[in-house]
Image 1 (tube, rainbow over the protein chains, first blue to last red):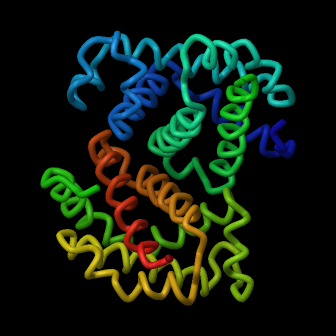
Image 2 (image 1 turned 60 degrees about the vertical axis):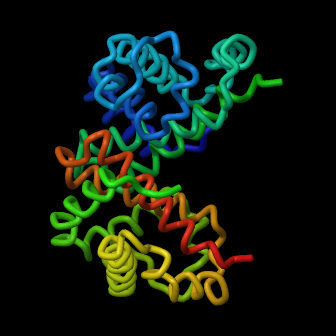
Length: 147
Length: 142
């Protein structure tokens, strides 16, 4: 469960309302693969990921990034029950995708940085703090069903 | 882990821009650190940590000045930060996990202020550079 004050919840949803999920999702996932190249291990079937340029323009990466961020956005509507919301996805990531949950934390960090880039000053320390709680909550929810 | 030539070039050239806002970047990174990771405040019981406090500004300056020293001696970060490394190992003893947290907040601060310069490659280079700095600062811990 994530411990957000009412003010923090408002800050989170207000900012999210301005997010272009397709653009930021693609940017977040592609940056994950560029900044932490070992994460490419999960996407060998996406084609050319050999250089930063290739990653940043890879259509499959960008499409998948949009999918991931759309799902994240859904989670923001259920901040009081992230574990329930992401239960099925958690099982999928454990049983079928075999993704180390550390990767959820890495992606969360990259997402915060992408938000910072896009919103500049508006991404104040308080807004960041609220989002850090959210990304940590989502990462924990996605790890919750691991066994 | 060591920085490639390309990575060093990115860091050094971005630093020219970054250094013009060095003090406020340091202060902002610390504010972000304390807001997002309140446990980090336990290292500063003796400070007034309100945003804008003189102590916060002075300390933010110090931190970014040290980063600047590492940039200026990017081929020998270990040598440049040797004294700081000893300080952290024997006196300050900040738990190593906190270097990741401050590094993250520095990246966020750079992202908000230099969105165009902070490309994916620059992001990767800075993440790696700060990781090297963190390693140097903790290398004498035990």
